[in-house]
Image (cartoon, rainbow, N blue to C red):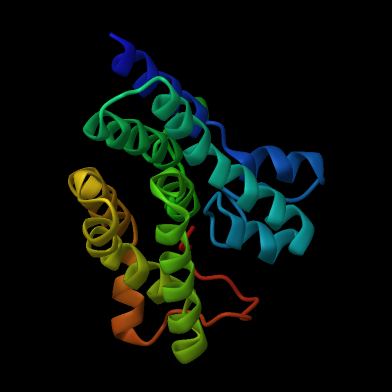
Amino acid sequence: MLVILMFVLAYLLGSISSAILVSRLFKLPDPRTNGSNNPGATNVYRLGGALPACLVLIFDILKGTIPVWGAYFLKLEPLELGLVAVAACLGHMYPLFFSFKGGKAVATAFGSLLPIGLSLGGLLIGTWLIIVAITRYSSLAALVAVTLAPLYTWWIKPLYTLPVTFITLLIIIRHRTNIVRLFKGEEPKVGTKQAPTDDNK
């Protein structure tokens, strides 16, 4: 019963779209209908600059971290902790409060993995930074980082490998339009202000 309660709470917390709320607070255009039409930190950055985007990024990370930490302190089993993390990501991707139209959950997934260990977080950040530095593609960096996440998890805490793998698959599926654009050479690089029809957060 406890795991079900935590799953529901994690999904509901994930369903709070910080991109929409922060945009309203700063009187920015609705990120669902402007820019890339994606309610995420990258689109908010394009529409309103660094400060609102940073607020969105921080809150999206916390949406993953808070419920997983809570489940950890309640002594849920590793697989159950993984399910709570999945619920937070599903809430971000398919938010109950915003017509089930959400973002890519990269930041929320990262936040949900932090309780597994700061070393895992460091590996993911390092991977993302290296790929961005080499290619200038934020979406490609996110895809590489999440693809390696199960391997990193297996190396650090193998009990969490299965749920992390499921999160990886969810994020890759949500990035399918980015993948198509990467193959076509149409994906914008970091620093590009003109947004495409989708986004990677």
